[in-house]
Image (cartoon, rainbow, N blue to C red; front, side, top):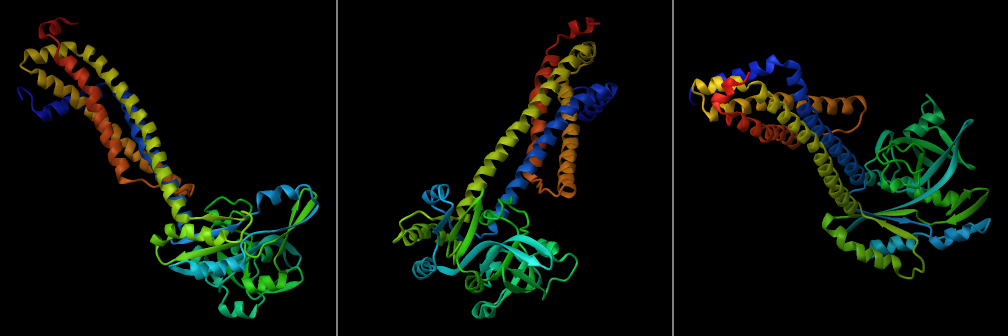
Amino acid sequence: MNGFSLIRIIQLGFKSLRLHKLRSGLTMLGMVIGVWAVITLVAIGEGASHDAQEAIKRLGAHNILIRSIEPAEEKSGASSTRNFVSEYGITYHDASRLQATLPGLKRVLPEMVQRRPVYYDRFQQDCQIVGTYPFYPDFTKALVVRGRFLTEFDELHRNNVCVLTESLALRLFGHQDPLESQVRVEDQYFRVIGLLREMSGVEQRPQGNEPEGKPLDSNVYMPLSTLRARFGEMDMDSRAGSFKLERVELTQVRLEFASVDLVEPSIPLIKAAMEKDRKKKDYELIVPLNILNAIKAQRARDTRMLLYIACISLLVGGIGIMNIMLATVTERTREIGVRRALGATRGDIILQFLVETLILCLIGGLAGVGGGWGFAWAREHWFHLTTIVTEWSVLAAFGLSLAVGLVFGLYPARRAAALDPIEALRHS
């Protein structure tokens, strides 16, 4: 390198940028916003993907859920009849057949769900009564926060015991201790033996269309044998001045397999078992593994789209840098002529302007990384929204900012180096 060392060129680059602080700052702002946007949008997309995948994982990749649904023909018939009894859905015979015929099936968890008011003292809440087996928390990853859950003894003896969700217990009992207290459902009294914390997912859609990942707050859990013995299989559905009685033996059945590899091959076997002797479509399959894979693919597409959008900000910032550097070449034409007269080569001139461009991109990129990381931290800790900053997004954003600087700074640098030294010295 003739006449100037690299260190001297870098020093001159910083000096030149300091002479025009406002212009340099505004030029770097494009890089700051671009890098910030890339990191922030990817972090938001990754956080949303994580939340969705966790909601599905609570069902378990080893599991399949079969839900009772009202056939379309019975829904249309209900509108023309004020007193209508609808009988549909999964039966105990279906559950027994599945358990006997499906290979690799570990456990079957049947559930019956009914909506009934629950009373304590003068307080009343409309609730979802869930009749289930003692291993229900293992399937749903629900947490028993106080007391205990149901036991085999409760199921065998049809005990009048129940477990409440945390928020329901708070609304019914206030600051009193709910454990060992009695709640009333119709004319039956049930002893509260525990409090449960459970998060909503696709399998909890019957309860008020709760968004996924939110705590369920109106559930009462009791032994399936108790619910069936005390309240039977009839449930009332009130709609716009009319009502309909529904008879459903099991609201849903969860199947747990020994291996994830057994889930997909079991789907046609489940359909064959369910459709045997069945005259109407009154069930649906929910396969968490398929949903999880679909969500992963969709989130990957969404993240790529967000990344493309954010890269546009970097391109706009690069155009701004090129525009400013072209103006700088015009302003410093005489300086370029003096340097060429003193022995600087075209390569030295190109390097000088490229160094100035890279300094702008380097500082802007670092500021953008700090801003994106800070925004993600604030969103996570202040608003409690999952935001995940990935290493690849930081490296990609910072690397793109430097690449944009090289690409958009090269043309002004080459234009500066192409100036005729004599003509440049005449420039005033």
